Length: 241
Picture 1: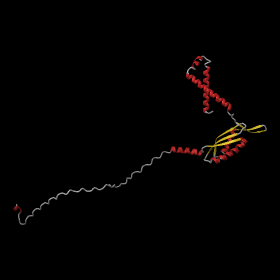
Picture 2 (picture 1 turned 90 degrees about the vertical axis):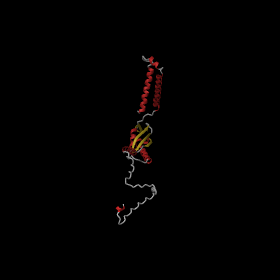
Picture 3 (picture 1 turned 135 degrees about the vertical axis):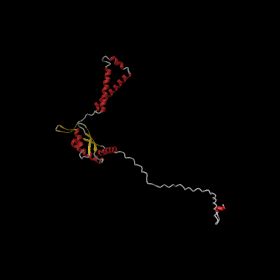
Picture 4 (picture 1 turned 135 degrees about the horizontal axis):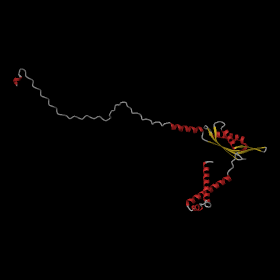
């Protein structure tokens, strides 16, 4: 039983139990007057009505399942021999289908579902898991023919339909997972560093225009000093003084 079915069953049983208890206590027990007075309270009345609705819905579902649900067939009658019956189980049919799919080693039967009637035809649905990338059209047609021939050995002419469903190749899935893990483990590469400045010495020449020298102001020529008189020969300088 799946989780959803289990949950619905528990809710249905609890709702039925609450509804029966709410109405039974109004007829039996020492709390008849008190329980009857609770129906005048709006929250209690709403709870009882909700439980009654769940109970009615659950009863309808059970009735529909009892009337229209198919009977589970575990064996399929293949042939009658001398008043006896030759039958094969659904598990045997599924095992035969899995063996045919996995014969060459490149495919795996991930899931095989067999629908059959006790004296009717057999329908087989196979979910195929390739180990590597394959041509689905060509391989599917070949595999379908092999399944029809192989299941005919087990089921005779009861095989009505064989359907195939190819899922993602195992190699692609594993490769994608490995790439993701490798990308997560590989540290991020540091950003490329900017080129270092050139440290070689260079002579920088200013490109501005050279300044013209300022003109000097012309000054008056300085007077030349007068030459001293030379002493005359034969004369005494002290006397002259």
